[in-house]
Length: 208
Image (cartoon, rainbow, N blue to C red; front, side, top):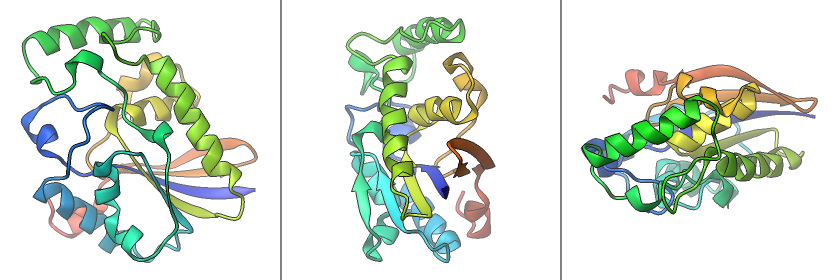
């Protein structure tokens, strides 16, 4: 069984623009730039015969792929695709105390201590379990040959470790941008990444 999976990060929100921590507990909307990014992705890839759209449970992913959903493609929300929970820091400015807290926790992650979480938050190991379950759900639907997945930045970095079969301590070596595309082939129980953080759709339609 083979499947092609197009995985994108959601479009920009004002939280992204202002450097405010989002996470799983912040259900923010796209801003105008984020809407334009989603529409640019649609215009560039609407010719792809997607069998289904998968998103997280958070509306910024729904809004990013809205035009695909509105075209009557089957759509399923999987909360396993939600962003990592940053606990007490969600909604905080990306400066000062948050930078100190993030540097401390990220240093642990880089050392392979991926059970470490922010206060009242979620560890990469915990997120990896639900991300794996979400991907297992997606690939189990054998009648779907080509699917679109919209998810979140830090969760995507964790997922990339699973796809590349690398330790979670390497998550920060991968890149992402709003609506950047990872195109992935699944065959014989293995994933192969074919495109990496591709943003050709933004350049083609002059969305910056």
